Length: 550
Image 1 (cartoon, helix red, strand yellow):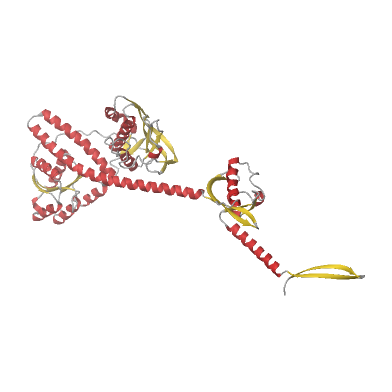
Image 2: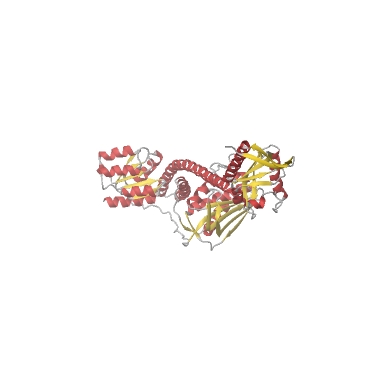
């Protein structure tokens, strides 16, 4: 059995009517038609199954076919575009020309690949990736355009870039934190030694009636205390702590800091201050907030090279939720209190904005900047849940905007700390003094001996443990440093309490974080003192310990 095609004709021959039939075997033609039909069905299935929009163009620059993805992405139906170019759409000549140029090149045998901003039927723009390739369709040259909507992909890539930038920033901040912590800890021990000898010298001058020397030494101690506060900030920053925050009025803080700031600025700078006194309080450590203001003011001073205008302001701000922090790249928003420090300097190049908060990055000449100021600002502000915005135009100045969340509580004013001389009454007791720094150990030993105490020193936790094991009853109080090799002060206290459960001990540490304080409390510490230790605080704690022991 095979298919045939029959053509019959009636003819007159010799007066008779005859029928002539032409029979043709069309097996091959049927097979070809069937193959073509199957090919067309396969083409249509593949064409419509594509997730990308497909547009088939002919040599007359008309659309021959589009798939369902095209209808979904662009919003046009197949019937609205078949047989047409771009004439039915109100588009700019450039929009149509750029795309038709790709079609012409494909018809000439050249492939092309670009990214364009395309338009949907309603006029909504979207980012598209377009491939146009030459193909043969039904024996004629055609161009096939493959269009992919990459809006979401670009958005995801941008989010990934932001996350990578945040990760790099966090790694940089961690590195500077570790470095800062090490430097601050070592400097803290040096400062403790200096303060210890200053106290001894002051007491000696006081006993000799040399009031002028007492005054000079007191001023030196005051400077050491300011240095101690700065070191404490460095330690707080390095360990991710937040100092001792409280409700602070930024307007009052700026007002109180202005005399000190003015003394640091050249007289050729014009300083303008505009603070809204009714701005809400913020929950920050006051010393650290002062450090932020100081660093930004110095940065502005250096940017102006000695002449220009410095503007400082405080005001309440309500920010949209998609505001992006310049230093950490996170989004934030809501009610904040803004501390503004603006200068009329040379401004910051756009390419440098992402690096200005990097540790050790500076554009200043060698010897005129460490690159630490803005890194410190970043650390302090973000530890208090704040953010930083930077507005800068090259040649037109820079404005730093520090934004801290508004706090509902009213600002508090701490009572001023009045330094007073420790009472001269003699103390009685036996002290085991432990510190791995000789520069700290010796002046503290002399101070305690001067107060009338019997002091045994140990330069390591191991030596202290050995001395205590020889005779636990030989000591009334143990005074120990915390950060020591091999064994911390808290760990030492735990082993000493195993020998004597009624142990009275004091802990001296350069950074009394909550975890350290909690472990010390669990070991029955009498007091935790911050290094460099104030003599009056040390004496009060010793008196309490000795009284308890008695």
